[in-house]
Image 1 (spheres, rainbow, N blue to C red):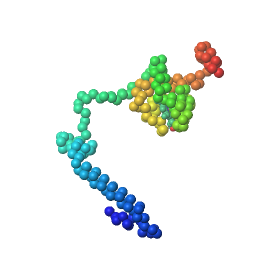
Image 2: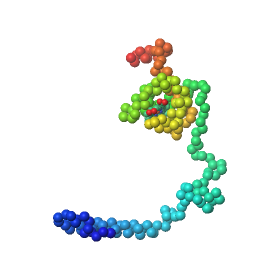
Image 3: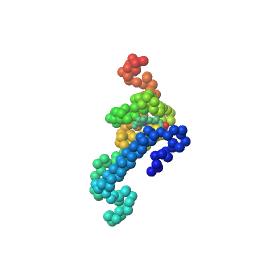
Image 4: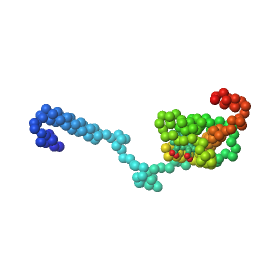
Length: 201
Ligand code: HEC
């Protein structure tokens, strides 16, 4: 350790004895604390300091010399991974309802309940994803939506851990319904819906 007197006071006009004394005391206290901690460290003999293997270490205890172990045969996963289901051929009303519910939970926060891209997070400053009714997305195959939900895209994160495979198809079907709704000719609506639409205008 350097003597306290050499600590940068060489060029200054007057020495600062009071400050040096405080510094010295602080140093002494720090050294004392370090020594105490070092002693305390030596005394540890609990599991914290036991011999251990890192994941990729060679391990002579096991016949295959591997530290990392495989699950015992027959182990049942607690959170089984969700198997991919194929694109459904028929879209049922139940599936659309499920898709609507899942869309509103997971997607509307950014994409908006109607798919206009003005969800609450976007209104608070997150990147606007644009509408889901562009010509490009109308032409895109269902698999494209499924893949974007599974893998994410740029600043949109993956929903693979939150939205199981069947729900991704259900959401995709509901996005088709949103797309159709935004291009619907009011004349084709049932009288009841047309009346509600006119009342809201
Ligand atoms: C946190 C905000 C956020 C959430 C939640 C979100 N998205 Fe997105 N999404 C985005 C952004 C931002 C983009 C634009 C990404 C880019 O720049 O390409 C995007 C893009 C998309 C696209 C367009 C892909 C393309 O080819 O242009 C689709 C489809 C989509 N999202 C579907 C969904 C669905 C379905 C959900 C719900 C499961 C969802 N998003 C949830 C932010 C979000």
